[in-house]
Image 1 (cartoon, rainbow, N blue to C red):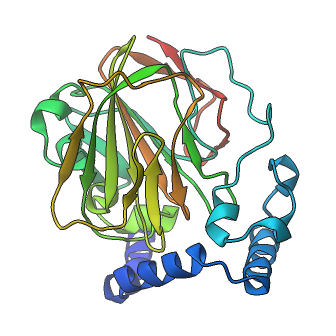
Image 2: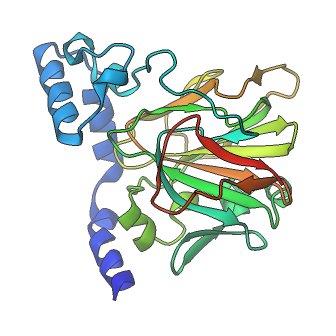
Image 3: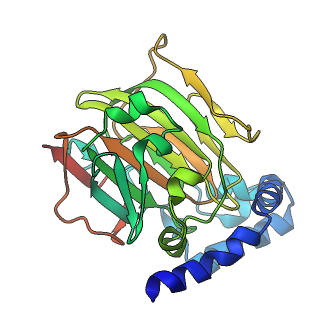
Length: 284
């Protein structure tokens, strides 16, 4: 019954003009509307109980646009890094994590999707993660929305994959089959001391854009086809804990690791709140 209920709950999302809503939200969030912007920010802080005390700039009235508030920096030292081979790359809540069954990633009861679909159809890339491990972390509206490196890495490639713009909240994850391989996403591939790693930024309804530190805003524009950027000739290296990207409005990250690489933090569990810098795993 719960599965049926979740599917009914997400049915309106199939009918909503999600792209139009997202374009409109991006326009509002990027605008500098003076007092209206301040009212929107203050209302958001109150509604979602955002902890502004940990923001580098704690004054809601000082942000010229909602986007600048939403992608706010934290105070230095607000997220110390644990002594771990991999640290959590974001603030959020664990959606799911664990072994990849062949090439299948567990999304929710009754739903899964393939690593090949997630990375935009690149079977050769996906093969590196056969029988490996994955972690999916959901960022709610109240969370800090910059994404950081879980370990040191050298950027190899970035791929933009067009797709739907369903919400990525837990109810939608339970109700929409293959959600994270259906939505628009940016797939970032790194070489690390432990082998290749994929860090995927998954878009959603009202997510105005996704950006990386080396490219800037990836979307918009929303391209109709898969597009890749090859960075193997460049030496783009990011240290553990260093910012690698950000969401303009909330979404989800999905990480892939090769087999026999990571042993997840034994304290992790689905729905557990997590913070950037906390221990995610040690080498297996």
